[in-house]
Length: 184
Image 1 (spheres, rainbow, N blue to C red):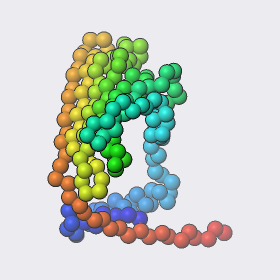
Image 2 (image 1 turned 120 degrees about the vertical axis):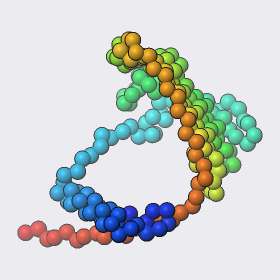
Image 3 (image 1 turned 90 degrees about the horizontal axis):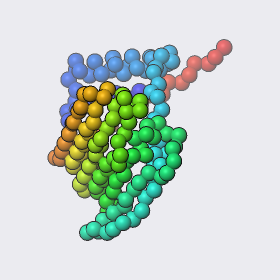
């Protein structure tokens, strides 16, 4: 059983530790009884990537630029109506094999219920990653979506998330495996 024992490098206060231990015990009991909910399976990343054709289009300052576009035809993937409209570019650090930047956008409207339920005109995603020690971590993620719902209500939303001040920390945990009781 896993349980939280510290936050930000400091042991949990006794009251918080008791709460965490109680929640962990309840989850373990639910698993033993078979009373846990299982999330709907999501498509594997490999299946989503198979949806696209990738090609090298440029080199910029030690970065390999890859363009991607959906392969023709409909695929048996959840939300394929969205995936077949998404195009973009990836910038990869050739020396390290790490993703440095990604930009995606839709080409054509994305419709649900023949456009009567919702219609998205603009769907963009821009991500930038920064090297931190030996890995690239998110630095900035920007999304924008615009369209209409139920034929009349328009919407436009833009979000920017910036990340930084990454700190290295360590995590430790204890796990106990109970031996099953013999069946009669």
